[in-house]
Amino acid sequence: MRIIFMGTPEFAVPSLEILADNGYEVVAVVTATDKLGGRGGKQVLESAVKKAALARNIQVLQPKNLKAPEFVQALEGLKPDLQVVVAFRMLPEVVWAMPRIGTFNLHGSLLPKYRGAAPINWAVIAGEKETGVTTFFLQQEIDTGDVILQRKLSIDENETAGEVHDRLMELGAKAVLETVQLIESGAYSLQPQNTSLVTKAPKLFHETCEINFAQATAQVHNFIRGLSPYPAAWTTVQGKELKILRTLKVDSPPQHTPGTLVADHKKSIRFATLDGYIEVLELQLEGRKRMDVVAFLNGRHLEL
Image 1 (cartoon, rainbow, N blue to C red):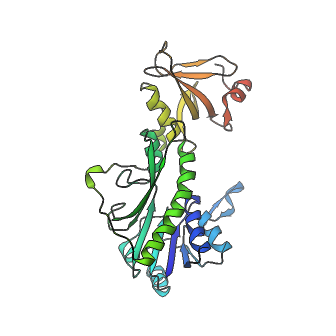
Image 2: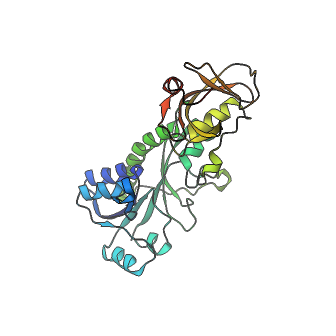
């Protein structure tokens, strides 16, 4: 079975590697174009998937335009039986409908919950106790195709989106391999998504990551960990943006108005919430590195 793999970030790498390491014929990888960055903005930055493909001598395609005739012709020339998509762009029908078997996608949620660009973040923000991965055949509307399989994992109440991401990355790779094996054997059935259960996970923007302390402690805590480590929840202290990356809920009656910063100048920073306090464990002040709260206070980065 001839497979074309499409993906860009680190999240997609284990899925590519597990297919190659299990002897599947990955005839090409499609990934994002190289970018310039690093010091002086002159360093060529390759995607994580491109690096993984080159390490295995797999052909790499990096189209700017997925509808470009030369790209479509290149795909056709590879005669794919199946395309596997993990953390890539939205595909035009001329691409996803091309392979003999079809194109399936790995999504970082239990669809139809959390359709969209940031499923892991929004699941944690919502305080979900469980999430998982879904493989499904692509259709015209994003994240709407028939489900092939799902695999679940639990979310700890203090776990960050970054930590969930890393566990889903490994679970997702296993799901991709299992899906390809099922397709190869023909021993699978498709399950339409229940549209009554749809929730959205839209792209995150800086302005939507500002913390609202006039909410319950649990909501604030989930919001912060759901945005950690990236793009990071933030507030403003003394005119400077302060990113808060890890917190604990404090079971204590509030004695301050929501948003009030309470510090002991040695090892504790708390913010008042609607019904209690949130204890800050890790943070990053504008222009500074990420650090734990004790190092932050010892450095006296703010006059608290």
